[in-house]
Image (cartoon, rainbow, N blue to C red; front, side, top):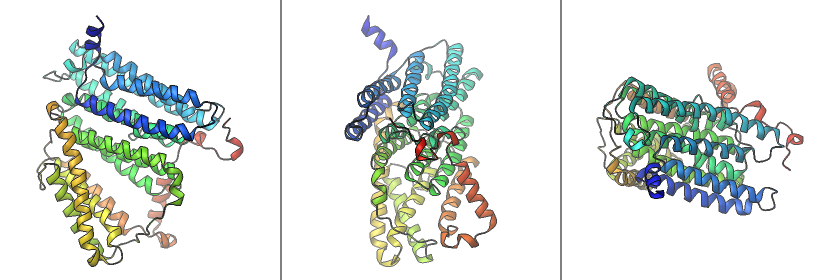
Length: 447
């Protein structure tokens, strides 16, 4: 009887294996850090109990095959996250941040629950595996997928549901790490779990692409103008989640899963090491780069994108949405090479070429590894290129060029009015909710 219930309620496939491995790894890292970080705290034991229950609820969520079980685990995970965010209820700013996150998650849960009701109404199925094998999408199912997308957006802080993430900076560092490296990925998991249905609707995939590009560009822009480390990391997470949504919208779901895995591990490291950020030695790259350095960087970008294409098993001059990933690899590799080419571009070019080539191999190899592991699920289905994809490529390229050639901080006073107004507008838009900001140390109550 128990085995029968387990078989009906759970389904362990390659996606759930990847997600469970990621959750356990990040949980161990965060727990190990918190063991020392929270030593002597009055809620020391309660933190580890809540963390263990949170990890367990996420494990249930990613392996659930019953719609109701997935919904319950989804809500429980978010409730536990909010409790960890507040941590000390006497701190008004932390309590306000938790309340803001709760409102966001409630709206998301309502959308997900409504989607599940519509799924059941249209198909009569409660099994997710049976549901995603439906051969034809009805209008009811399409509406359900739209609601599911909104639920995923609220979870992953996709614009315009990003305010709760930017306002969550009062959380203790271990909580921030588990939030940004774990729970924030729930939206990507939800899209990947129902990917076979989304792949049947190119129009809905285009919506995901547009939303993802907007979030990626906004998050990256806001990251560059933040005054402190945790706000910068929060905006960075927003941008990365946007790019992960872009990959889902391109029909490249295994690439999106690979992205959320590596982002999760790297972001956990960044948060857990954020206390030492003030001691880091940073290189002043200098803007704008010289023409020689820029041309050399583009050569390195071409090398990095080519090695990425080869190692990931993709065509370099792809005629489908894979081209977006190739262009992103080109821009990223070019930016990666610029600091190495700053002083003596021609002399540093061979080393930069080797570095960007290895960068492309590692990134492409990781994508290929996840793609190979998830191959039986048949979720890697590049879509035909259209105007939305080309507009996204153009926007990314122009944003990168603007960052290189329009960023002149030493001459800020002489910058055009539109640039100064744009800067102030972006800075204001990226601020947390006023109630979640501790404006004076007397308001910091952490008993």
